[in-house]
Each structure stands twice: as structure tokens, then as C-alpha cells.
Image (cartoon, rainbow, N blue to C red; front, top):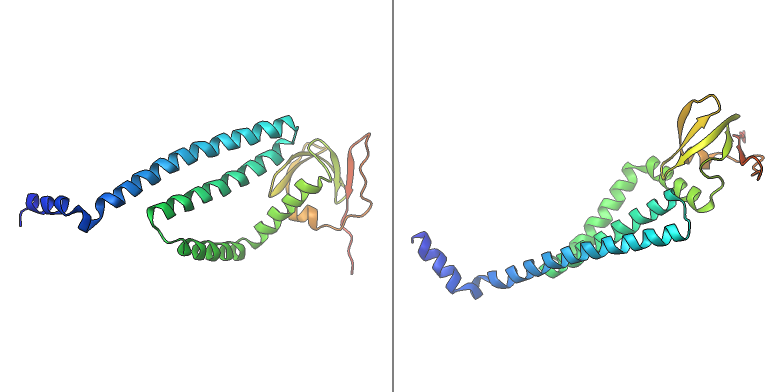
Length: 190
């Protein structure tokens, strides 16, 4: 059977092949994805303006914007996939397996990430404060989710993982309003 005859057969029996219905679903899903993507960008810009108006620190606002953006994009992807007709049970299984695998592979990184979240929420010190880590005075230059960048008084820059800062027993912890000093020292319980 020649190719033209096969194509005519497919288009005359489109209901049999269900191409038209699938094509409409795919086109509608692409349109929904594009509209959803622009709505997500609008929502993120709105959150950014609210964070600026509330004078939330740049590190914290960036963290929350990234989390909100990824959650919203994930939901949009699942909605579009469901509209096309993909089974959602597969997504649940893949997300569960991926979460477990990532947790096992990145155990130490996850500890630093959660410690960074704790530092963001509790805010024992902020950027520009002088802190004492293991007996060495340092100025906090940046606090990120995984690490804290410090500069010693001798202009030596170093990066300390947040799990190390949070994991240290805090002895003699105090914040001075005049100097902004936070003392962190390691104490052994042996």
C-alpha cells in the first residue's frame, strides 16, 4: 500500500487512531504550561516585592523564593501530565524513590541544608556580625543554605559548613548589641 493511501486511511479514520483527541489534549496542555509558567513568575515577583517591603534579608528571601518556585513548577508539571493522560501513580512512586535515594546519597549535605534552615529561622547571628568560632574571631560575610562564609580579622576567608556551626555545643553564647559578637566554642563531653 503506497504511503499516500496509508495517510488517507489514517486521516479518514482519525477516530480509530484517536490522534485528534490526543493532539487537542497535548496542545491544551502546552498552552496551560506556558500560562502556568508566566503565572508562577508573576507570583514569585509578587513574593519578592512583599519580602522587600517586609525587609526580609536577601538570603532568606532567596531561599523561600527558590522553594516556592520549585513547588509550584512541580505542581504545574503534574497538572499538565495529568491533562495529557499520564497516570499520576507513577509520579508518586518516582518522587518517593527519588526522595529516598537523594536522602541516602546526600546525607551530610542534607544535614548542612537543614542546619542552614535552622540558622535562617533562629538567626543567632547575621551578616556583618563578628563571631568567635573555635577561639578565632571572624566576620560573617554570607549565610547560605549549606555553608557560612567567614572572614577572619587577618583577612583570611573561609567557608564553614552549617552543620559544623549548628552541631557545635554552644558555650558562653551571647549577643552584644554594641559589638555584635556571638561566641561559639567547642566543648568536649568525654
